[in-house]
Length: 247
Image 1 (cartoon, rainbow, N blue to C red):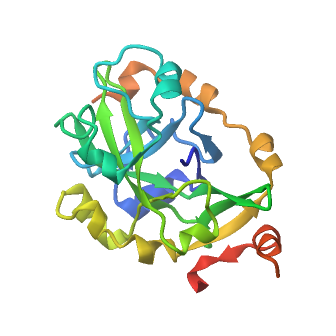
Image 2 (image 1 turned 120 degrees about the horizontal axis):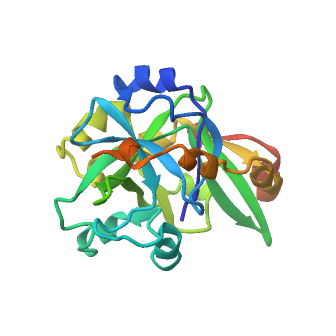
C-alpha cells in the first residue's frame, strides 16, 4: 500500500501542464508530504470535468457514507485499490457514481525491506515536474469529492525500490491521459512500464517523514462544503539516488 505522496509543484505549473485551471486556486499549496493516514486532500482531474482541477479527499468513501473518514479508513482502507478489485467490489466498481480521474503528484514514497532494515525512497522526476497516476473518484452527498489510487502488480523494475507489497501505482504517460479519462483504454493498456522509467528513486531517511509533517488539518480548516461542489544491495539503495530509467 502507498500512503504518502508529494505535490511540490506550483499551481501555475500544474495548470499549464494539464491545460486546466484549479476550481479553487487559493486553496492549493505545494506540500513536501501528503500523508494519507490523515484526512488529506489531493488535486484531481475527473472524466466529466477535464478542464478543471478540483480538490479531493484521498481515500474513497461510499457516496451515502455520513460517518467519520478516519473510522471508515481504519476498517476499509481505500487510499489505494488494486485493479483486480475493480471487478469485485460493487460499492465502488459497478456504479455510475464512481468515475475515473487523474491524481496529480510530483512523487510518491516506497518502502524497501533489506536485512531487517526499512529503506524509503521518493519516486519523482528529476525535473520535479508533476505527473499523473490512475485513480477513481466520486462525489459524496454533501458535495465532497473522494478518490483512490489504482494499483497493479509491481513489475521487475519497481521491485528494486519497493518490496513492502506486490503492487505499484499506475503512472499514465501524457499521451494516454485523455484516453484514460475518456474510457478509450483499459488500465491494462496504459504504458506504465515506459512511464516508471522516467522516475528517479531518491533515498530518504525515516526522520524525513517526521520533519515534514503534513499540514492537512490547517488545509481542511479553510475548506467549506461550497469548496467541494459537485556494492551490496543495501549500500546501493541506501546511499545513492537510483535512476531506475537505467535499469
